[in-house]
View (spheres, rainbow, N blue to C red):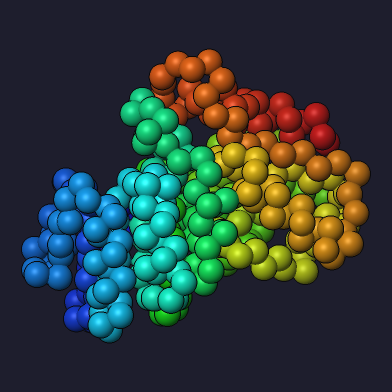
Length: 299
């Protein structure tokens, strides 16, 4: 998604000379055009993410509109104290962009993965989280983030080809209609869920995609659960503090009952071996085949 991201940020920066872009020594073969067009507003902060966060907060205090970019764990877990103290507590207009949500960096291993970023970032004041499911969503999301004055965290992953028509962007939206099972998916793991249900009969799975936190659940999703009474949540994030926990809390608060609530989530590093993203997804039961078996067992 970084190529599309760079394209949209460049459009914004051309129109708004207060937009500043800081990268933690990343962007090779993706940000060269952005760098050339932004000039001194493109800053390579080096492998110094703590400094980058604090510098961005100072820029925001001075009236600029900084975006900071790095591998997702390096702009969340690594710099949590600076984000909390320098950005979120004062509510500064800083946009945090992390590439490689979940197991996206594959063979680079746990140091480059981030499985608990939503849990961590949702604990911070004023911050909003955005997790595009499809690269086609990115322009709408970035423009929405830009217009909002709140701090924001954008969780990017590698773009995956999608040949299925999708509805227009919304924070929580229906992807397919169904009457037997309600499936709620967080972010880009939707690209494993969609192939898992294509072979099923029509009108079986009511599939929803969540792309923003805090959660604002539409009435139609509540109605779906009331009808199916079967819920399956899928996310490339640990169980604690992810979509499953937040969604379950919302259902309880709204007194929505269900017969079954199944949660498919990232289970960490079961075999303690290195591998591709698909390897880690299989270990966690988040691969297309295991998702398909789980859904079939519920309908």
